[in-house]
Image 1 (cartoon, rainbow, N blue to C red):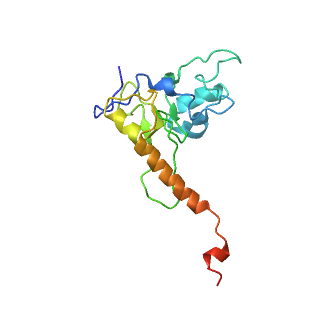
Image 2: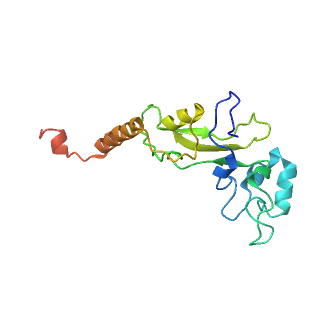
Image 3: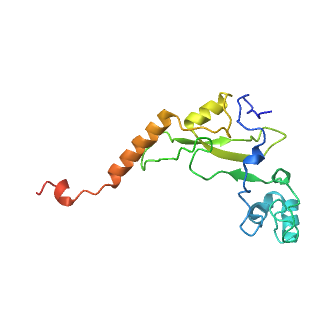
Length: 179
């Protein structure tokens, strides 16, 4: 069953957690940053993590080498936002122009919503705006094997061309016409 938004449009996945590598609050050592930095919002959770040296039970088992005790879904403060700046469906990479208010090529897509009582974690990925529209129109999935739309490639290349022009070297003699 593909999950839906509160407006009834598709999010393009059956299980949002299948698209998660790790929680945004887990350190490289497997510690829970949320309990340290935001523990005042949930003292019971923070105290339990503190008593266990802030170990994240969804990332690290009680002893090194043990499997984690929890799944990501079990953590009440889990969050996973994709930070790769390319579309997870077609691979189109972002091209942002400095000092421009142009619409970005990539948009953040929520795989879960806070208003879903059974799934309240924030889980997002980046999709190009063309793939994003296809997914919300309910006929595409995040994990489809897709290529970028021709329009998407043209928009990216147009921005890349402008970027190259901005980075190009022009000597003072050329700029000022020798005067």
